[in-house]
Image 1 (cartoon, rainbow, N blue to C red):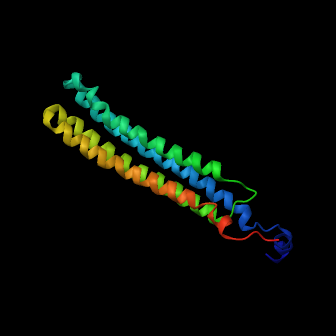
Image 2: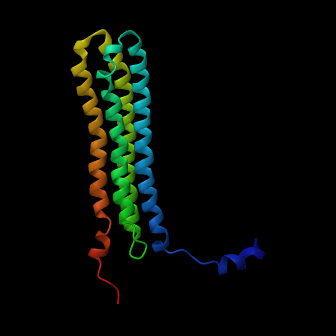
Image 3: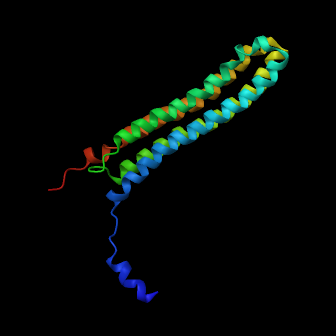
Amino acid sequence: MDHYRHLLQDAPVASNQDTAPFFGFIGAAAALVFSCMGAAYGTAKSGVGIASMGVMRPELVMKSIVPVVMAGVLGIYGLIIAVIISTGVNPASYKLYDGFAHLASGLSCGLAGLAAGMAIGIVGDAGVRANAQQPKLFVGMILILIFAEALALYGLIVGIILSSKAGASAAATPAAH
């Protein structure tokens, strides 16, 4: 190990400013990836219920598309936060605080989207099957889906607030001369 010590001593050390954009871009990726995972799960799980229900009641298929549409919106939430974060990463003036704010923003939106997608998928699957047997359940299913979608909306709102915190460290600290 001692004969490699000179390699470590001569190696350049990355500063916080060099690594800060990494966290920002990971936040953007997390927002999009986790939200799309939720959207995909919600779409697939609800789609299975629609296909199963459509065998016996094909006239209800178009009415039962609502959970699939609501699941698809989750991916849009992640896309919005990913774009906000990625446009805010400026390597020349980006600080570690900014990177952590963007990471938290992306994780809050992405993981909320994933949880909402799982809820939409489960409710959508069971709801469209139940609606085929008892049409009075449709309004109840829609209300449950709205509350599940709201979880992702909360993550989007918190993601926007956290993303707006990035850049605040530059405004709060005076420029060094």
